Image (cartoon, each protein chain N blue to C red):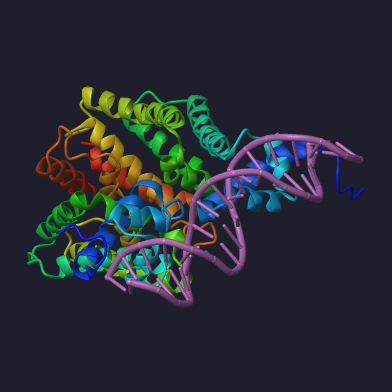
Length: 195
Length: 195
DNA sequence: GTCTATATACGGATAGAC
DNA sequence: GTCTATCCGTATATAGAC
């Protein structure tokens, strides 16, 4: 075909999403122009506005999409009954979900500053729901006497920061396989809170 | 006095540093203009170039200054002999140094993308020196049989990510005092690696 | 749905007067 | 050391043709 002009909404839509995600992860939201995203997609800048109202909405949709995918994936897992097993399940789920999504994670944590107030509030409430999932596991285990916590909210944030930090150095070409990473971090998490 | 024009290098220099740090922490490097920084300082944009060669160098100086202050502060502390006491010393030092410097920490971790290759390499080498300080404590404790580690490098990064993550939610007006935070995190660190 | 062209604003950096 | 003025490039977003 090699048409230079025509209708491609089903193809272009995902390409805009992917190009924006990759470029923003690499250079930052403010540093990436709509023209750059368009060039990566293979269209002119004006065409992007068929897929997003504006640049701010594009960022918001990327972040909301990531958080909804995370919550959806977590909700659809089978959770063990035992608190220790459930904490291991959460730890391994978190690593498996986040490691292959380095760009999404990076953007979702680094670009919160660039959301307007309403969009920020919505993303924060989604993040809060995810934190609550871990905190509930910790509190349940504490109530059943198998975890020791000084402060369930602080511990929740500490563990999530530790786990999410993997993305700052993990490279899939590196020497450590994902299963090995899971084991190392599960060991740290378990020792940090289990009796 | 109220002069509108004249020499103020000793005053303006630090003000440029402070204004740039605050604005970049709040909005991001790419989103902040030299004109905005100048307005915050109370001069015109052209005057900033008496204090920095360009915008890139301004960012680099902020980050290098932070890392050098961190390493200098660590080097000048008295380290206990005992590995467990040394790890507690590191943990509390890290929290006490980072918590009052939220803007510096935020910029130093979020704006690495915006450094050019040479500047990035220099900041990374400083960061690596700091990581090495913790890793040495962990390896020493492991050799003496008081710590259990699966991987000293990964554990180092995990603990630093956990500790540095405090800055993402800690607010000095909040309900938790710094000493309480230190205790909670020291408990997590100790349990994660100590026998 | 995509193109070209454009309105309008702002960016980093520099020159020369004071 | 700071100012004003400016060079030159790029930004987001829109209008109208195809």
